[in-house]
Image 1 (cartoon, protein in one colour):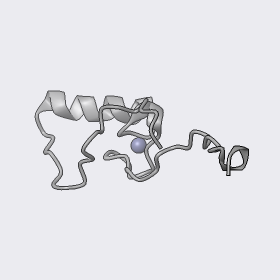
Image 2 (cartoon, helix red, strand yellow):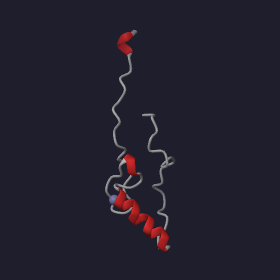
Image 3 (cartoon, protein in one colour):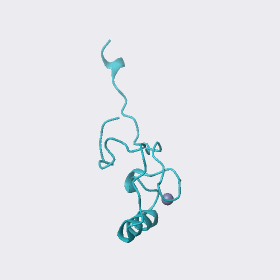
Length: 71
Ligand SMILES: [Zn+2]
């Protein structure tokens, strides 16, 4: 048991567990928690208008770190 046990690094796969709070599409890592820049801007606009409410539950414990290397 030596070289055969090498761990093969997994390719970076998108985290699709979270859904875009704007349109409900699967979020992409680059734009978490949104599916696109557009949806992120839409969400920001809601915040600025003061009409946005924080959704209950569903908040990932580490939604601010899209570049984490752990798998
Ligand atoms: Zn979206």
